[in-house]
Image (cartoon, rainbow, N blue to C red; front, side):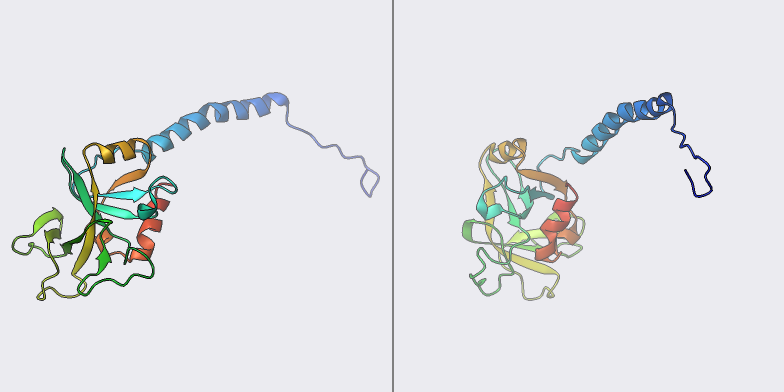
Length: 195
């Protein structure tokens, strides 16, 4: 009863109305979910110029929360550099003339990525405006336009494909800007796109 003594009744929608609303939702929800899953997993083959984004808890400790730029792929080996690690361990200092740790293999090797268009002589074009060469940064290149990495990320025949098949990496197209993104934010930005 209300204050005035008049009885109010609440009218509920009939069951048929609830079913009419719920049935399309039950049918459309799985279709929408499948469409989102397909969009998320547009396959990108491992090739030079793509990024490997480590999936949480699915790669070895050395590659946890890393983003790797592939430089060469082939039947005998695939390799690239880790873009978002300044050094192999937090307490290790990078050697002189080295900007970032490139990976746990061949630590004496150096690779320099350069934002120059056209590429410097002897450099291998990778992406629009981005090239690479073996060796350290040339003194003539301005700071902020080239990065030198020490060490490599290397996979043997079929190894990377196996890791991708088991879900260890997200494979996405790279841009030249990715290479020069702050190391601390690159993995978070790229992983967030897949979560």
